[in-house]
Length: 265
Image (cartoon, rainbow, N blue to C red):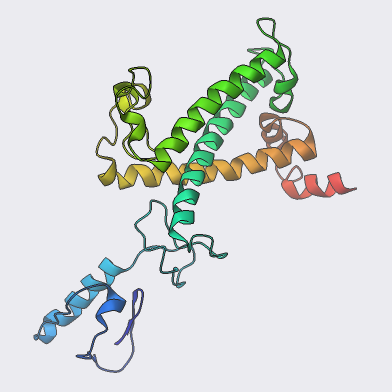
């Protein structure tokens, strides 16, 4: 059995006997000492355990992740082909930017599908999602709604940015009209309190890796879905529910291939 030591471990069966070198590069395997049992029967079990401990999933099996993506970030699968995260401060900013875009995408996809379902089923008379912004409401003009949204979103984003620059600063007494306890953040990018975390999930945010991983995975999927919805609207000029109903009516001939081919002709 050959043992390859690098950023991860790889055991490859072969006809040769087990060879273990006494000179082990400690920095390459990330441990301070390498203890190898003397008994032959326990060596293989120890190595297998060590291999499982060191390995982590990557976006492409067999690809070594860059050194600055060490697996500590939620959803880190070593994907950075352009090297955008080499600078630690840039990486910290990109993590927050992805998190915010993921949450907007999840909210956007849910809102589009829900309102489109109401429209298609006739439960409510609603415009298709890409025309909703042009609708005039009776209770306020479009200009008024735009200004109100600009102020509210600007305030929220400013508070978020200030907490990013100085973590914990927005939870200090007097920083938010006495409502700091209701909005007390767990860490930058993860607001908490009874208003934003009413179920008390992941109160210990530093040990909530599973929750973070689930959120970023669903957020990435939502961003891809949002891109698909944009392309569908541009090509077919209908909503996503109409698209899927048309596909289900003739699955063999109403596909993305035929749709793109017909749009180009």
